[in-house]
Image (cartoon, rainbow, N blue to C red):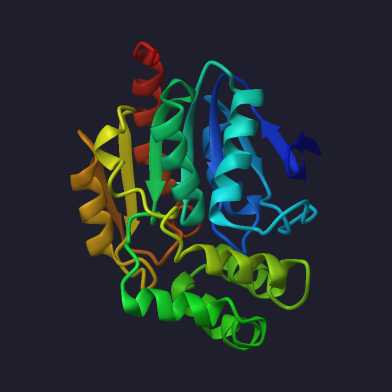
Length: 266
């Protein structure tokens, strides 16, 4: 457990070498990256943690918003990788990673966005869906079908991660944390589009072609917004790092090695 301003966070490190920070999706835990980490630890020191109210992390203080998750990310990266890390984020983890790259470029040696939140906008349909998902009864009822749809499960790892998401939303504190998270997605603060052009870190955008929640067209727009960003597509749902860890590692390892070979941001 590591202390942050909003409460303790469960965290673990594996391997040695340059740091790679791994940020998971909402309703999931750090074990989303287990299979990918086995492919990274021979070369890198990987760091993963559970969001407030998720996995082994207690709820802590304040609503479990995307912005609070981004604050936690900034604190932990500054604490664990003060000279900078390659920061990898899936879904709300992508928002946290992207906001860190905007606000603290010296902490982000490379940015990897996986089916990332924070770039979709807040149209009427998005706001309406977020409002529904912020209702505990609705979210609890729909999540088994919702998780199955966004994971597009084919493997045992996909099914395991799907089941973690469902279990998280069965009761508090996970249910409360995930509803609060969805409420925050319609906030103007959960929108990085106007800041995307200022991201200076080398950026790799990884996206599942079969993601029904944040579709591939959004990933293509994200890659176009960020200067020099490279887009790679996978035949997966919302979590390519779970569904195709070998494919993700094949893109991530050379990207991270190149990012750490460059001079860090001032």
